[in-house]
Image (cartoon, rainbow, N blue to C red; front, side):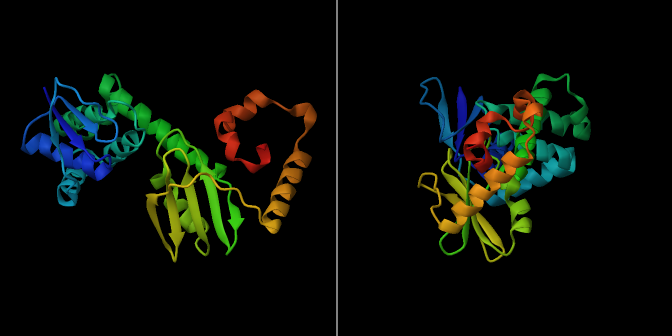
Length: 244
């Protein structure tokens, strides 16, 4: 059996897809960050090539649809085991039937890709309201998050528009990566340090003020924790100031 190994990036994945069509069709595609050595596979390491990646993304957008490209990208960000080969099958089908692929929900591959795309998109949307910033010395805003999926790239432009005059970091603590924003530009980079907690006096004052406000507007008799967790799942509470 034959397997492509890529660097874990979306451009690397699309470079592998390019090779699927212009070289040898693999039996699997896996990230170098997650794959295990398997004597049953002959492995080929794929170098990330932006030109090849762009050609594939343009072909998907033009020959299938822009919506399909969004589904592929968001499903890729789910980091689900085996998602790369499912996406390859989805792309193969899309090149055969075009934009109608989004109507083929009875197809197992199409259904799974769209399912994970929805999950990633929903979590990204939730974090537009779940991010809580703390201010550190020098006026730098910092927020720690622990999302299930790799959503940072999906929320970067929202916070760029919202906090355009600030310097800030949104830190995915689990994956040890973060968005760093300054001078109207943001980049995604590795962040090796653990989650930070500000001890600035003014920051702690506003945190306490926010907790008091949150408590004061709550109506004890109408507390419905089950409904609350439906809109604000408990797995996110660790980084919400008002829930500490």
